[in-house]
Amino acid sequence: MPSDVGLETEAQSVRSWRSPRVLNRKAVFHSSTTIRYRHIYECKNFSIGIFCIPASSIIPLHNHPGMTVFSKLLYGTVHVKSYDWVEDTTQLLKLSKVRPAKIVRDGEMSAPCGAMVIQPKDGGNIHAFKAITPCAILDILSPPYSSEDGRHCSYFRRCRKADPSGILSNRSREPEFVWLEEHQPPNSFVIRRDLYKGPALNL
Image (tube, rainbow, N blue to C red; front, side, top):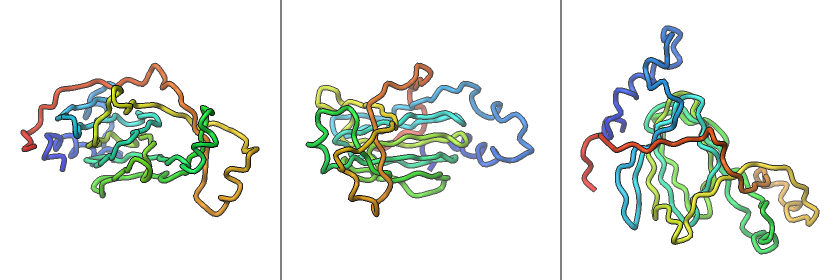
């Protein structure tokens, strides 16, 4: 819960975010549009942190290679769009920078709600967040990102691509498929790392 990590004040404020009586919404939260990451803990097996995302801010489409992710929306409303790779096409497209992916989730979530559990190959390992209201997302990554161990965070974008090989032609009855290519996020995308100042956690 927000109170478990020192975010109860923000959680209470966001409950009135959509109210017409709240005229100066930015006064309730930080006026900056910068996304903040509150680092709680990290070891070789897992990491814990909280993303505090201002309204309308976006964490672009990114992956968690070889990682299991537990994401819990603590407060607010966020739009989640997530994909998984089409695994049986990997060998056919291993030389291509563009790969097919299937849509797993495309919709809003509002706290309180259940947690998202993402596996290395299913559950929406490649995902993006857009804050509808100010929101906070608790993330547990196992194992954590590590470039040395091949777990580097890559960003992606949706692109148009024909399918001359017919790889996806027999999947018309399955969920929607798209093509994704690796892409650098815009320079305006900034995450500020903060020290965790909430209640002590018994880890």
